[in-house]
Image (cartoon, rainbow, N blue to C red):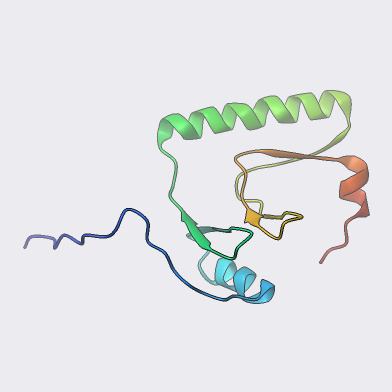
Length: 109
């Protein structure tokens, strides 16, 4: 049996007005997917990386972690760590680092 082909537009736009809690609930309920949200509230579903990009990202995180441990200046996170930015966008950077004082000042919320 032949698998049917689905033709989608190059950019699939979903208009969802999600609260902060609804966005994070969507992420928790669909933990096999990676979501980001722009400052305008547009929902972005991130595609998985290929092996070449995954290898580059692994090296990037290794280098960042090595630097951070040598200097003991902060905390390193991988691409599964979501961040709420000052412009209200929610992003999953490939690798990230936060200064220790900023990390220590955060609450669990």
